[in-house]
Length: 426
Image (cartoon, rainbow, N blue to C red; front, side, top):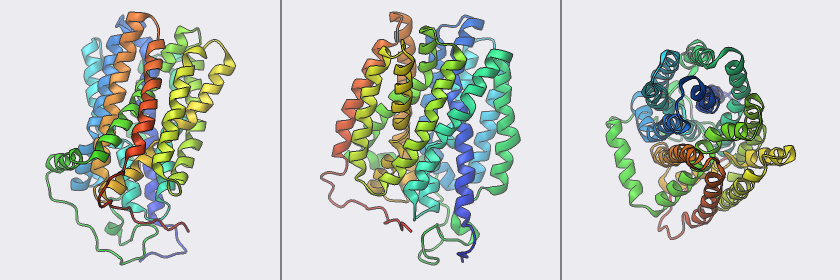
């Protein structure tokens, strides 16, 4: 039974999860500072390097529904530790590569698959499993770790690359994974509150029975969830809008903003610092979005977010010539980058129920990352063929306007919507 005068262990879990997502964000954002150094050292085309990044992003997303089912079956702690070992090993071996296929295998396949287990689907599972009260706020804080990861790691990584080379950066990341994250997860992570005799934060003790780990094969459970989704219109609307979200964020901006800045005469470290500075606004925007998603119709929030993102992407190609233009884009786009996550998770929970949130959001995240992978690859191809990122930015901006309309139809015409439990706001 919980003791009210003590810190609920859910907040410890949230803190550890924040650090996992923080480091994962650092790993995910690092390809942006690798594109130009790899291009110079090995002579690989930007399209080839972008393909490896695209594979990374794609697997990062496609692994999400299987990650959710695997965590359900084998436990959060065990699954995350194995994933971190894969990520650290893949990055540690990267400095030995000499051929482009090795970049695709190591950074694309191994790191992409491993980091998929430490993605936003983990945040969704922690928030839905450990919290009843303040779930939206917690989810906003967890997803804002991506912003914090950019702010903390990107300038440092860029500085290491400039002063010591990209291999030193890779070894630094591997050291963080093995030296810091693995011990933290092993010591503090727990699978469910019932495992340590607690109820979720905000739920009265004894109001539900302890949940037993499912016995179903993770792959079967994942595809069963997909089959459920494919019979629901809400799934197509959520997955389609999140596809655009991925294409317009980590796929295009996360991968190509630094190279685009370099194309326009902005030094690499300055460009990485600018991208990282978005994290300040990103943290505010995502945390605020989590708070708002507990109080405002999430469809309205998403409509506004996607429309504002579309405007910012249409303006970006004409902002590189002035400091004030880029500063305005940094603030405006930063507030919006991850703001879509809390309302999307909440809408997913409303549509499919709390117990199905992990797997269903995993498939929706897979769509997000497929969009990101395509944008990363196509952005590189357009840059090679046309000599500019202009067309890529314009297309992405227009897609955001399409997504802003799509989200308004989520939940309409649903016969018996499954409402998420009302959070205690105290």
